[in-house]
Image (cartoon, rainbow, N blue to C red):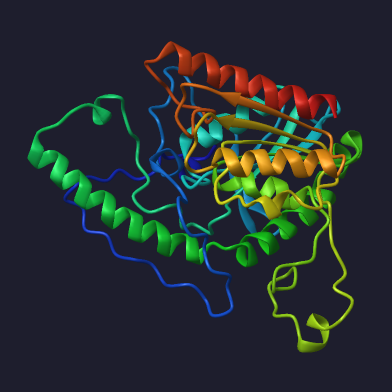
Length: 332
């Protein structure tokens, strides 16, 4: 990486920080989901494991900012193309970049797009185990006040980053990958994809055949004639996908899946509730979608993203989830 492209952790914040909401949603965007949306583990980085640092590069691809990680032997040795879709900490998170590097070390050309157009989740920061321990009453009061403010800002942020905004961005990246990395796409017989937290839902959308949501791929509004037309479905856009602790998922997102998908889930996860997961499993079974679902007990939402934990059980689960996702995309 050049000095200007050095990766950074998500920006630090504290209880005294003054935060200003970004612009509101554009007219015509879908309403963000009610109920639990994104938690602390979706919008903050864990400490980066000792001795690890990003090895890839930040650049443009199809007019979109991406982090690109490639195997050392590429292009001399054939590789496959993998999209990595992040949680709210986004493109410049050190841990997300290291996650991409880990898949590159396994033989994939990894493209990690900026899903949020340089607007990562508000107050993204690095959280330590010490931060989560008991504090004085005053500290706890301050923390609750900050959490309420963050919740409001996250709602506003989610309203800015809807399906209508993210899907056209992904189409640009996919089209560019098919051009610049045609060898890797061809070698794999298509594009593979993995996603975490916010990015997890988009694995399901890319894996399905479905009508576009209110907006045409490319960002322009559908005309009345098009809305009343044959409603031509699009997709799937990937060959196989794997996702970990997805957020903002509804049972409807499981309809129309056409490619194999693997899910790494957290037991009793309020951000991906058991009833949504079970409904999804039933839909995939009824629609004969090849799938696997692994539920991990005793771990927090966000556990599968690169990051250091004191708890050996969480560390082991993180490694196991990576192997689960890697095995799935390698075998499909």
